[in-house]
Length: 435
Image (cartoon, rainbow, N blue to C red; front, side):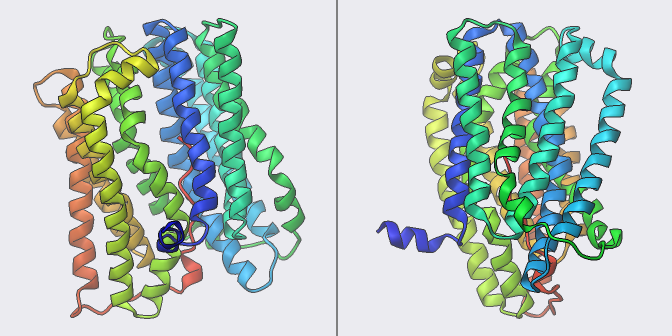
């Protein structure tokens, strides 16, 4: 039975999934210990920093990981080393990081006052955490492109294991300064990248420098899609802080709730590493039947996971966030219902987005996310409570994205419509990283 289930998922899923499972557990442990150790105001600041780190970090550096992965995979299939790709990718990641850091420094006082209750040290930690994700995603791109999925999973596992160990020490020693809990987001990813560097260093090799156009092709649209996707899933915590700065309870409670209802996203992240190549293979060979079968299977898997998670979240969510994270009891069963619906729709959007990428339709994917963000903004303006506004934004935005992608995909892959697809090596993916 177990072997049959494993055969349903693409190769590499289990290795990456194991690392993601530990990283996911680390998120719960991290927030749980912080929730029991910090005041509501300090936990609020940590929640906002957490949200910004993963919105910008994943939004900006995941596309670079994906582009490095696809180009390394293409070179690897030709027997060429990944060194030139890594050099360009690292330079691009460093340039993006420098631009973001410059902006953060310029707005340092404003960010500290509006988001972190005047604590400028949290802004410094924010910069360090973004730097850590830049390093991690760059090296993961090489590991993914070389199909070194056990090493990829190991990096995720080290990141998660260190988070658990460090916050356990902080909690046991009664540390109540939010800066230390935030600093974990700097230390863990950097250590994971360093400890899994050997296979990357062994494989680097030399060669003629790769043209910038090779790496930048489609990267702008991919980055736009990635950032917009992170806005849809994460902006709620920040919106609570901006819409009602005096509400120090809801932002922290919302982050805790989101971590619970988004458990199925970890499963999709492990599936993503090999879903896109499978879709691309079918598309590039003109096998629309195989393409649709794989797409339906992926949608079926995430739907089952999303619905199961939704039932558990609605029934147990309010109790779990108070018990596990010591969150204030400001969210009820209805709040978890909206968050669960939103997460299910978001999962559909992520799968459908992979199908669009397999058809080299970067522009269509970016358009769908842009329309979804616009719907989120409109929904957030509804004259209801702050919590419900951000929940509606997440739900409506996700549903609109999924629906838009379904329409665009159906128009492109209908039997009467000719399908133009790129060669497989043009779309080899990375994998969605830590949370």
